[in-house]
Image (cartoon, rainbow, N blue to C red; front, side, top):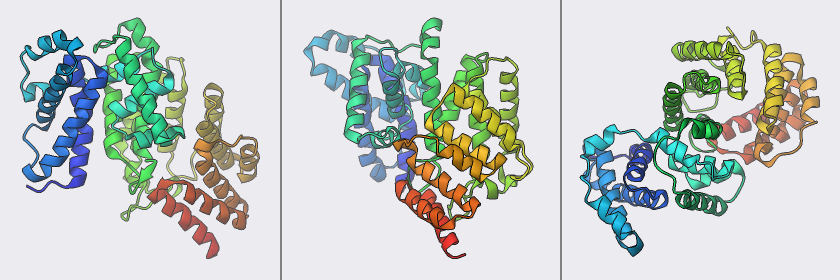
Length: 406
């Protein structure tokens, strides 16, 4: 049986967190377990194209990981007693291991309080989200080497803290919840608007983020921000199929066919955010979900309630004054009150390396709306050079060329 490289990559990315969870649950030693998982994934990538994918791929990976773990533990005489205890335990069959889902426990482990917020997010994106170190580094504007060192230190800190592979107690869980929500949010965003590659979306990441957030929501159904985050993901993902055309080119919100939007996801997300907002404990994820609900509920782009969206963004900016939120508010203000108001607000924002590409694209769009095509062309071109996502680059280059051809 022929195994396509993309299918194999997707399968290994999906199974890696589950295999890691199984090894950490049995052995502990998060740092050694991740190395063993990487060895198992490499073995699969080398063997499966020739032998075919086994009937129980997760069980196969876990068995290989077990062997790598035992080999590594045996090499360290200080862990000899631990090795003996582990090696003499009965090993579950592959199907029993495959039925276990340790993803949520793994997320809480990665968000251990001994880690800094950036380390919590980085480690979880690597271990659970399956992002490459280079992708995480790009998101934070640092080198791949620096990010690799940060992730390695985070694993060592978890080891030194003696963290156990169990869901935390209620008090500890509340302390880690903000980091867990941020991690899930970032995994979803990386999937919905990939920082690099030939595809605008990475459906494997958005699907995994939604699955994990549903699990968290079942665990904490009365936590408004958990509900808000799930609603935000569903409402955003409802528009996914309309964001590209048949050639894979980016289609902006203004030109999307709303008939392609997933009405079931929109209905579910709207019901969730409506319920969460009634509790009057409003947080950033709920506000973003409320904005998404206004977009999804508008019959057309021209009928979007931009003044209300601008108000919600102003509220959101007070809670989380981050560069992406500020830029989104600029767009909402421009759509509600005109491009000159948007440009004036944009001029007050400090330059930020992480949002520079989007800032250039936003400024180009507002200049185009204002009739300043020459400056818009230059900024569209600059924005295109700053993105590593090919559909987005093609769109920005097309906008520049369209203005030249006028």
